[in-house]
Structures are given as structure tokens and as C-alpha cells.
Image (cartoon, rainbow, N blue to C red; front, side):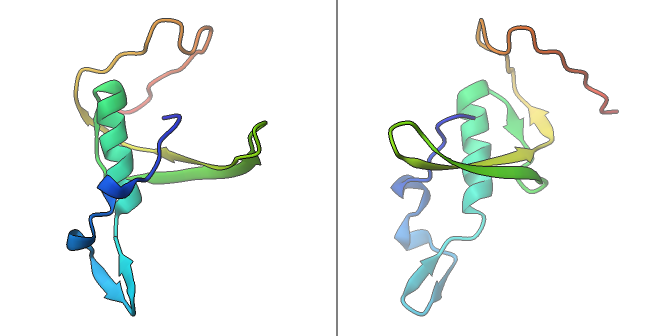
Length: 98
């Protein structure tokens, strides 16, 4: 999901998980963000409690902004998802899940 950003709507200080000194901690912030963006971006509901880390890459965009790319695999739960026209043209895949 390109362009996913953690924002203030994800970090409501009245709903923090715990206080760590004077720092608010928010457990499962990334998991919630990924689940929300998957559903908003594709219509797919994923199992946010069963994500599998694949890898990460850090790079600097041409405009000088640093980016961290994190890749996860998630189990599809439900939803009517489809790719936009022209996305992944020529890509091939195979679902081997049972």
C-alpha cells in the first residue's frame, strides 16, 4: 500500500496503551494502520493479528525525503477486493493457500 502514513488519528492520546515515563505508548499501531489501509485501499479485510514480516528497505526519494518501506504478508479474511485497471500489468501470481 503505497503512501501509508501513521497520523494523529492513529495516535489518540486519550487511548494510549500505557505511559512510559512521560511518553505515550501505542501498541499495535502498525497492525491497525495496515488493516485499515488494506480495507480502505482495496476493500480487503485482513487478519491484523497474524501479520508476517517479509523485509524492509530504506531509501531517499529524489525530493530528499527519507522513506522506510516495510513489507508484510497478511491472511485475507473477507471483502470484495480488486486491482485498479493498469496495476501490475504483466505480473503473474499464484495463490497456493489451502
